[in-house]
Length: 139
Length: 139
DNA sequence: GTCGTTGCAAAGCGTTTGCAGCCTA
DNA sequence: TAGGCTGCAAACGCTTTGCAACGAC
Image (cartoon, rainbow over all chains, first blue to last red; front, side, top):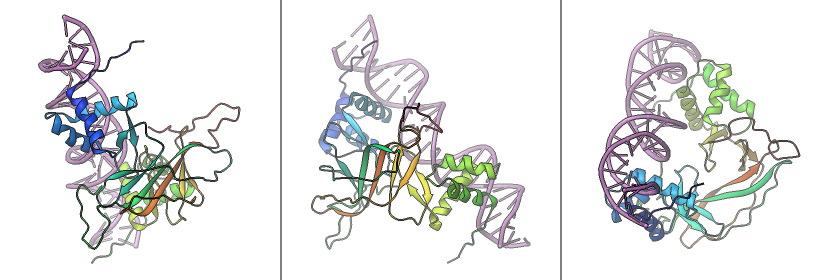
């Protein structure tokens, strides 16, 4: 078995920084936009390849929010869930895991769960002002 | 405004039957395979168009399971959650909604949630026998 | 210098759409 | 008969892959 030494390139650094800097789950598009700032000329393929490498490495983990393309966040955090803003499309991490229990049919065995809340985030919840739609509003 | 009268075709009937018959959330592929039995020559485009029509009509609803393409199930049921078998790829409906609560950050407002359990279903949970893999095992 | 990495473009894959013919009402 | 519906194939958006040049070690 051959051990591949990973190289520390400008592009990969920019991508890692994007996650560290923004601090919430990001889409490939968001990573691309953010990392491009630090490393112009960066290609989409590199973003995908780097994200995959970071996933294999365990540095990133996937956040699957129903109805959206997969997002990625820095791994190693405690078990937590996510909040998906239906107005601006941003996804946030929620702290801690609410207690979740279900009575499963006989013969079923559960190994984990995934919980997503929907609603409006602090920027988008109306407070007497009109609702803003800062970014893409999902599909 | 013009009201479009929906026609009751052999294809649409076959697709409706597929859902009624199998009784669990289905992927477009599964619908295609199943409906094709009753209506050979059925095209994938028709499956997509019919599913969309049935969604608009309110007869179907989307089941988004993280990491899978969207599934569809007959609508009108009570609020419930889903169980995704990591062995055979099937998705099942669970009865009732387990109590779910979370403390959201200030300014956040939740309108709904989505909960998916992972594990092995009654066919796939080992009972001393070998594990079977009846259909497609997901992506 | 080696060989992992990059950017580009082409290919893949699931889904959608344009179009001419079909078939339900 | 009218016009919604169908199957086919092309188009689409997102992701992956092939390849030659690049650059970290």
